[in-house]
Length: 93
View 1 (cartoon, helix red, strand yellow):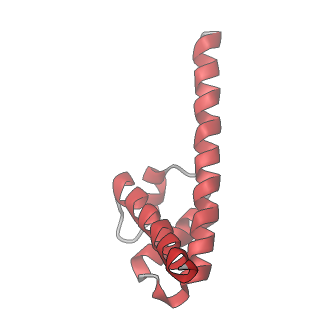
View 2 (cartoon, rainbow, N blue to C red; view 1 turned 180 degrees about the vertical axis):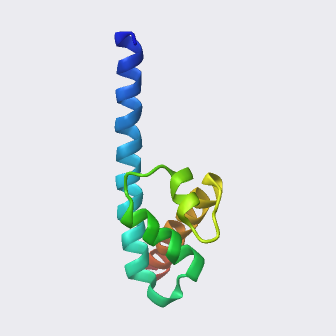
């Protein structure tokens, strides 16, 4: 493997880890803020993310019951974070 290829791989791994860490913080906040308002499916996916912060979305989806695609996991996590943001924005007005 060339040094340039290795540098790209390392940079990509760092970005992925930072994104996963950021999403874990958002999910944790959303689950705490929304409590019982979180749809069960979203809560289950959020808990999977928190329990397995380093796994890729495809692997998280494979662990879901029933299994989900990578895109479905990403969508659920985004919607969960967005719902918490909307609730906070509504409270701030």
